[in-house]
Image (cartoon, rainbow, N blue to C red; front, side, top):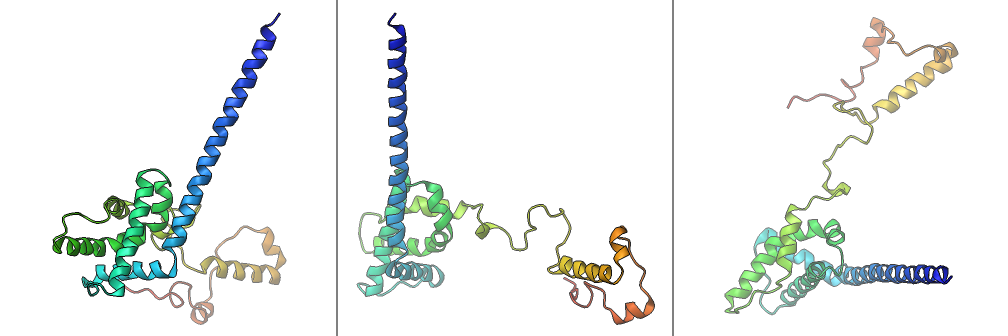
Amino acid sequence: MGWPKDLLGIVIATVAVGLSLLTVVLQKRQQRREAYRGIYEVLTSQELHRGRWLIIEISRTGRLPDDRSPDFYLINRTAGWFDTLAMYVQRRVIPRRWVLDVWHHPLRDMQAGATLMAQDHLARRQDWTPWPHLWSLLDQSVRYRSSLPCCQPLGRAPAGAAHGRPQVPGRETVLDEEKSRSVEADPSQSMQPDTPRPESSAESTLQPKLGESEYPHTDS
């Protein structure tokens, strides 16, 4: 009977195809990492770091560097590299999420400056719009909200905290220290549930209440 041999041949062929597909997937992932690493190193170089901040300064002031000055060439070179980054995203050479998670804030700050640069370019009677891939990425950066801490509101309650309960910095630590001192003075308290202890008039006078004197309240 030859069917066991045929079945074994089919299994071996299927495993070979699966391994080949796995190899292709792993190679593609590695190529993505290498492509992103290469352009990331360029974009974070000292020269392009300065160029990026010059474009952000244009967004804030609306003033462009002098024509054909070193800064003029630098901002155009920087915009060209970000256009290459956007082209990689559009052609799925690198994942869009990788780029937007890292660069959405700088891109957002650069948008107005890059627009002024393009308008100046067109005003020089050049009939083509520079950096064609960049504009889509700039628009996406404005709407993008990352799950990273950079896009989370300040003072956000940590995971597992009670909802709606204001968190006072240091409050739990102070209460724990007071409780440990009381247990050392009277070990029998460690066997009793926590109950509020009435304060004497002297204690209330000498010891300010937490949240009133240590954390003064100001009316909004």
